Length: 630
Image 1 (spheres, rainbow, N blue to C red):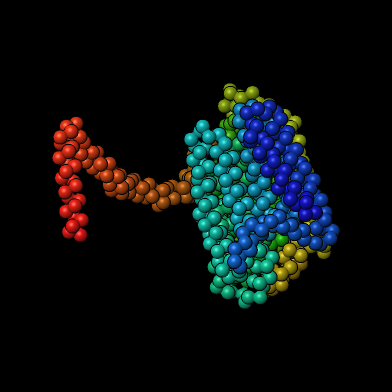
Image 2: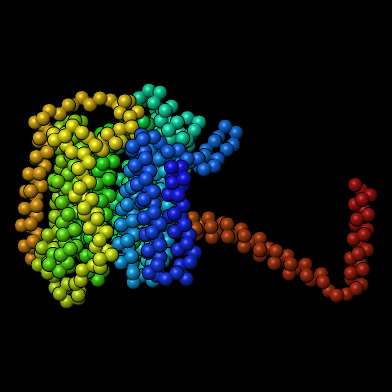
């Protein structure tokens, strides 16, 4: 099993090197097949590891070599595969494989397709390092590597300057969060004299709840998670990341990069449950992010940005679960979200492909008969993410809603409202794109065509998973066996023992209310959305609060005014005063004085031998004179 965990890193890195080094010589049709083959092998290996750790309840520990060893510092390059890591391996390699296969069709005509698949394999490699790491420093390497790979993929079409700006924005905003993560690592080492995740959990479990050092550590780690998982205030990079190809959007937004923050908090669950202040901060930040992301999504008109803000909202929902102490609930929703959000992004890519790169939903309409397979898959993804039974999103959302109501009625109602926002923006998208009358732009400019099978089949697999994945854990009303919770219980055992016991125990009536009332509201919202958007003759310009939401609460403009422009002004000022005037002035003065002295001294070179002899005599006399005096 140790060899298998090592090979998980070898194959995607080998794919990156092979395709990257020989991209100019390699046939464009080969790179996608080769990259997909490496991920397929990884998926098989992941399945073997998943079966082993699930059946034996053992953890696979693999130490490759001593990475840093100095005095009392010992940090090995080691891999750990427990149940949580095994679950993430299946998600990363499974969803990653389907996106790779989809990309073969989507990127077929792109001249940089070999470079694209090289970057995709590199992304998977760093994501695997992140989840397999046995210590926080190795995890940080994967963390930074994922950031680098996302920069390369978001800015893949680098000839368009807007894409480069989006890539830089993602990279810089992630560095802000990463600084917090790095500070947390420093405090961890100073406090525990180790960076081993398991050793830190053991030592931390002996510390009292509310310890200030643990609070500093967990807040620092959460700042890192905020950047990577796009939580307020570090969330504006995620919608702009839509500048990359659609498969990149699916890979980043579904199962990999943005879920890294969720994974970090879940992996460090012992530290977080011992810091109630941090847990409350996570709960508040998650709730606000979920609410704002959902409200903004309702008034977006770019099909990919609607899904991007949906991701922001769903990630906030997962952080709410973490803040409520429902670590397995957050991971359950992360798992189901990986399937239906990847499906929705790939289906959006199919729509964009059918309309020759059109992304504005105002220029769409009437597509359900033109691309019926894509329409059916889009419907499945929408039902799943909206939490309608018996699809996967219903079961994972139900776990989080139950945790929210156990925290208090107010939190439960807020969580229900946030969940219902999903129904509004997703069914608006469905009705405008597929049911509304066909727009003039489509009739005039777009020969509509269904996507090729290589794109449709991966979407069909994701659709099946979006339907059946939730059945691994039925609501407590219907089954006492909580399959997903039981699977992850060994991972969160220490945290569950240290966590405070919930004061609110839900009775059967409340559980039925949680189960039924959201469904009634969903049915009502679907009906109202149909009446509102299908018969809409033309789009009305938003006003008032609608304009604020359509402009994303002007967060980008606020950041530009408060941060970007002042820093730009300061940079220009210091460039003119400090750099150009003082530093360059000093350097230029040294050069000018050297030239001036050279011009004057060269006048002594007269070519007259008698003059040189006189200088020699005077020089000898001067040397003798100074020697006598000294």
